Image 1 (cartoon, rainbow over the protein chains, first blue to last red):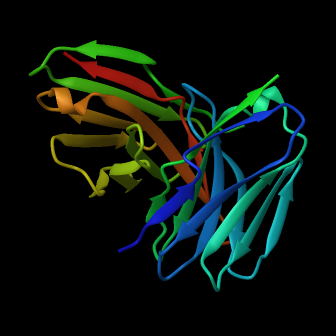
Image 2 (tube, rainbow over the protein chains, first blue to last red):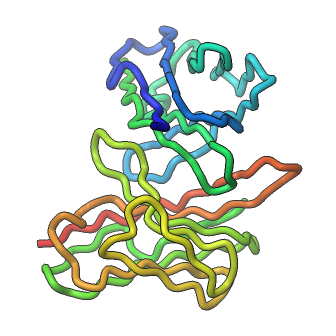
Image 3 (cartoon, rainbow over the protein chains, first blue to last red):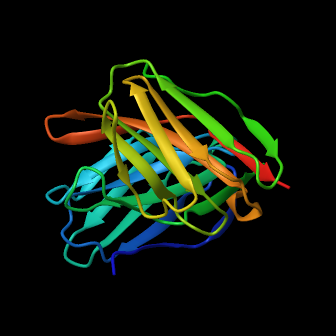
Length: 112
Length: 114
């Protein structure tokens, strides 16, 4: 069964600290993997899209990694800011343009 | 920037009412989607449309229908609202650029059925 699992479910860190969010997937065949940021009460916004051949991709203070062999991805946030408080969702695209498998997200809270 | 606009941020409806959720996008995207989002679950696809008057069932279409009469507008219809349809509803549209599909989401409609 195609699944995307994220950990931890929630995370609280102090402003300025780094953190890493994990995503494991069993989607096959695999097309790409995306990380979205969703602020409370808003729709998800794309952070990165990674294909099979990409191991690392950065977007500002966000760095995503992908290990297609072990079917794992991580999102690393450097020097966290209060505005990073949000849910971070891992999404894997399967073999059609419309098949997206969504993780349940990690709720990140940055404390001052 | 692409804008996907959902007509209502919050709605409260009674059980058995017919409910219309409207979504409009302004960038001529071919594909549009309706998802629902519930705590602890990933987004679940209800219906999608890849062209005017075309629609496809997603993972959880039961109790819903859709309408795409114009390219920019995709409506989700709850024929007879039930309490288990209380949820956050998200509309999205997508484009394809050299094989990469980019999705843009609306801000969501939080529907409460009482």
